[in-house]
Image 1 (tube, helix red, strand yellow):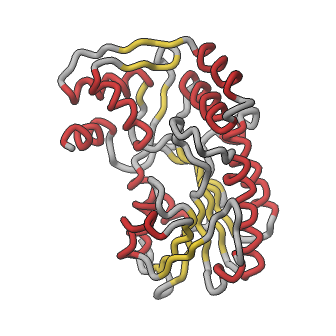
Image 2 (cartoon, helix red, strand yellow; image 1 turned 90 degrees about the horizontal axis):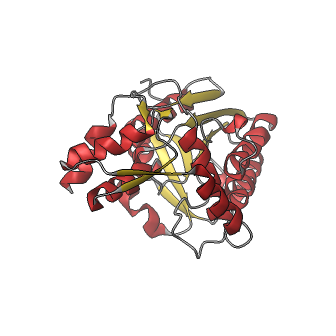
Length: 292
């Protein structure tokens, strides 16, 4: 990896998330001066030792955002609305944060003279514009592309972290999957994605699709969890129509959760295979979870 100019300043929105906690140390180790944009300082405590500065700002209601970006050469955003399907109190939609919040961040970056803006969207987003989750990401990607700033849009497959819930189901003895589990994907470990992001920050590509090194069926991702736990695989398939109906019913009251259900259903029954990258295997990740 080629180091940037000494102490190149970069601001990270989403530093406290699954990707951010791997990306911030990687940037620090490669010579960047990292600033985290966060709503609450305790959210970035895990990466605090790798930060040069912390800026308190809520992308849902930003204040003085341009001034916060003064002096930054690069802005990297993996910020978005919560993916916690159990959090019923969070009423922010993906359009609120993934589109509008990032759009305000981009405007501030342009006003502050930022040189480059790197954004994490979702793999398959351009083909999934009928899904609110994907459309919110891609609407911002459109704005970024049209802004005139140097940019890169990274579209990863699912993070390993989303498989924590599947592993918990296996630990309890039975897991459910949407459909028959035959669709395939290559999820990516956050550490591998952080490396891909570092390359995107330093490179000249404008669009990068990226997934992990292993292609697995949805059923296999569950079977591996049972294998690691030394349990017989007990997996029940649930008709996709049931989840689509649940999404439709939830939409008027919990639009974020409805959008998550709709997105999760579609990617569970369609192949989502991106160019392979990295070295981390899902079975090894499961072994780490089992050891905790």
